[in-house]
Image 1 (cartoon, rainbow, N blue to C red):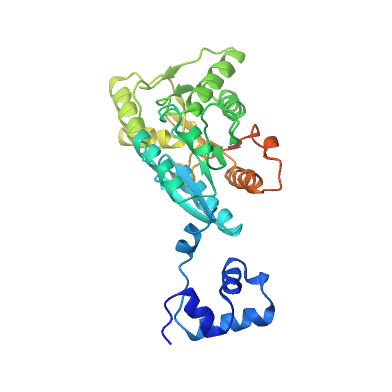
Image 2 (image 1 turned 180 degrees about the vertical axis):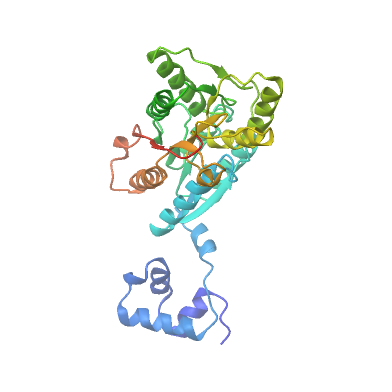
Length: 341
């Protein structure tokens, strides 16, 4: 007998189609003797169900969207890795989409999730450049949770406590050497402005004059290039504003460190070093720079787990989701002291 469909397979192993469907949804939901019959039949045949097609035929699928601005960013790559595993562990199928930093592709991603009938979505929006109302449109159809940054409103959000984390690293840099100048980035989302504000407030609280530099008028996500080009130009012109630099994120620091090295400057906290460089995020590659980067670590584990748990609570039909809608979880960062500062 040629087995092409689930009906064919159900007849071949002597079970009903509904029973077979329950098995593929949850093997423990059928009797052990029936489960063994199905599994023996699977082992003896080359039949495999098209779970993706079955998913789309449901009124509410087991698909969960994961949308990020740039999949090549080490921070988002690490978060996607963790979110995928957690979502799969809860019995859902992750659908990962990157908007590549472009508002029109972000809007397209939202329409894609709707067409795939996703049960819900975990989203790091572009932020300030996101198409107005695009996520409200999505939220009208499915539960969504923001992580890392957010769009104004009462959608649940899990993110970093930028006021605490930047204040912590500024305090460390001021106590351990020359107060830092702040290397800013284009304000692509709320994180950029929050980190700058915390730097300024903390420096003023310590009695130091804040020093902020960096080209921030343009929108863009290629932070390594920005860090390299701007640092290289300032070193060449002799306008680098101090011997301690706090970069807005690790990717910016990667570029700044490469430029300093190419100009023959020694980076580190030794007495014979020319420059201290520190940053924020603790990207997975930060420990492998030369020298290893001192930074503020975001809590990847808690951010991923809280994002998934919040979405699952909204998907739970027995849960009072009104208690979840306004929920915000703000996670403190941890200082990671390495050799760069």
